[in-house]
Image (cartoon, rainbow, N blue to C red; front, side, top):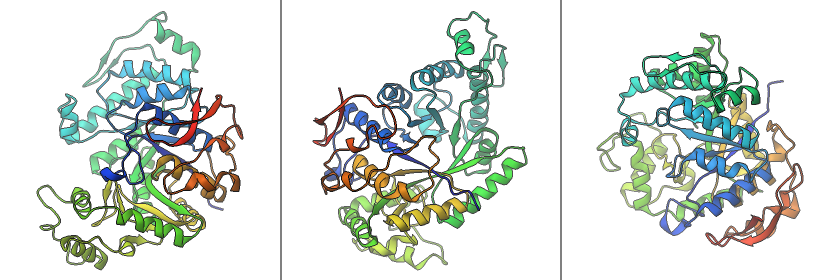
Length: 434
């Protein structure tokens, strides 16, 4: 029987709110809200969470939240080159000690303007060459190697056994331990970089079959090097007890999206200089794509079902884009728990093992996923996942996102003391660490 085990991660970032791509649906949040979100993710039993590339530094956030949590992993975005590789190894080892080795790296190579804004000026292919050497040098130091490292971009001197914290790492961690690297890359240079470097290869979602074809291609390239990769994807989710409830919720998200916002989100998919009016789809484009563009050009939103690209896979509006033209960062899973679980299992058959999910408001939807979806999946989270059940529902799921997640507290692990409190940022009733 094919392996059906999956890892479910959540999203840990700001902003938050019921539909944060619109100002009216976005909450002003601060670190206290992030802390409460991390506690919720941890206690609900998610494998971990992706820390988005927002204005906050992910490593700093992971370190701050490690003491508030017990089992969740922190998948933290890092741009190679912003910190010297030996220094990053020291930071990573420190967070490992604080967290119990729960730090994962999401390797982000960014784009040319983005990297230039940080002071790194490298063209597309050189950026991958630099990244490969950077992470090799990082692993060299992270594993406790004392010898020098010299490459095209990097020159690290040899270190002595008594070189302060570098020596301490050798006694704290077994030799040879490598940091786990996750990341993406679709161009030929990006795939070559990925198969040499990553443990988990990530891609934006598509239909299960098309995503599986991509993963099989990347896996074959890795096999040429004697390497085996695991695969993951990024999806949003609207899961409810029935399909009707889920699609009604999706329709509300669409209805709350202004046409101007929808057009701006859609424009992210177009080549530079093109917009909804000027973009010309291919002659053999899906009729649904033609209807979606026609609606936006007429000042209307597309029909909710015209955005369904595959059963339960929906290209709705989101903070990450509006995938009117082709699948991308904004795809959702929409449906009853049984149908969403069936779709996840179908993705798993085609190679997807890790699912980075999100839904807004983040805490409310995390609880829905843990309550409705987790019991239907074969989870491979590395610990016993709590079973919530009917007692956790009700007020926690009202339209305003109010409720408590404390019902999932000590069911499966030691937890810090909590008390019910009200977040000054959002007005949510959530567990507050005291």
